[in-house]
Image (cartoon, rainbow, N blue to C red):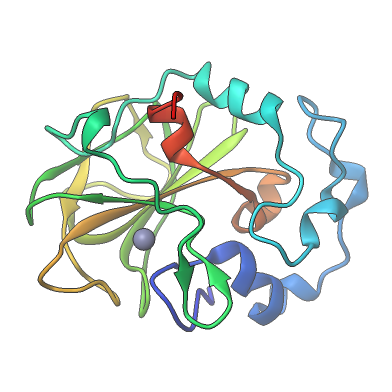
Length: 206
Ligand SMILES: [Zn+2]
């Protein structure tokens, strides 16, 4: 699978839209999400960083009761980096959670492993879905995967899935977890989901 070419993003959404041969497929308008029929998939193809996600999406996400996916990190330690620029045009669209190398990375919510992956920008990366496949969460720059974890495995909230690192294009002096949440508009094209700001889930008040 083609992931990002530049920037600290592994922006599956933006890059696959442009680069993946799979993105040339016709958008499947018959597969709008059964739990979110108000947003048609084609509305997510705009160029801005956060097209067509709204308060209802955020509330649904909050309702899943996510935990901060790095051991020992508290909400007060988080810094919002969702709108940071990465590269010449792309937005970060994720939350960087700083931590020492090899700090355990935890499943933010129960679900299953969609894909374990390695790419030049994102390094060792795990994509987990929530149980309903409504949201897909990306855990990037891992130092290592938890031994034995594989695609399709069920995971329980709080379970160790890997360890913080700086693989990919992260600064080796600043290991962190690159954590992205996308609303999954079509499981057959789960990498095209629309990003929501994880910071707003963990720190709902500004
Ligand atoms: Zn990042």
